[in-house]
Length: 265
Image (tube, rainbow, N blue to C red; front, side, top):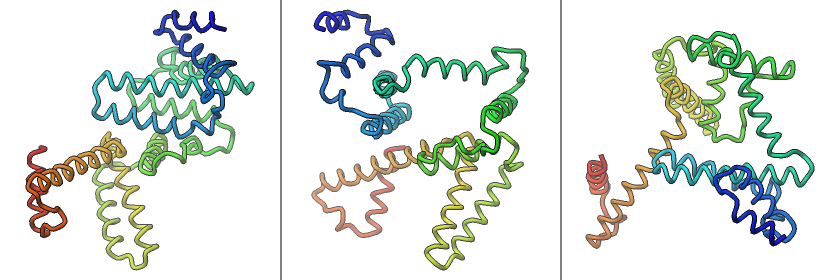
């Protein structure tokens, strides 16, 4: 066992097989007690957390940070595959085989004689292939994970149906729908009505963002980050001046907000 561990230490760390063997060692006899007890469910939240950290790095991190976070995400993939192997379910080689076969099958314009002159045609072909892969009677929306954040789920739904032509002809039609939804919010009476109308407005905004090539989750994360930075700057200014932020008047708070906003732009 000690020789095997020493061999792993000396193995090329750039090889994918090294990562697979390291994870297997951690979960094997005389491995790590924590890794040995993990299940698909116990590390589910870690997979989600690492995914969001990759997104955060892509939004504003350095290339080194993106590289590091992708490595952490890859660890989650290999760990899930090792857990599955230990349970007698499948191995990482089967995961790789499956995705390779799927990529080749869904890109006939690259690996076969099927023609696709533009992105639109590629997506239409892709959806037709997926339709043939689905069980008869299964909705094309069935494969969109409902565990996605709501805004991302909305855009994913709308992206799917747009591939089969269920979409607005022009952006102006979506803008008119947004205006309509805002009016309906102002007319809503009960809390339930308002909640439904707000949902419809957000759904329509997500659709418009999709048409503009904007990922709404990323856009909102950016707005959240800017708000966090600006409000923190306001707090810091008050701290330096020995002023309690909450003691400022409404006008003073707005003036301070505009000041830090100008500095950040």
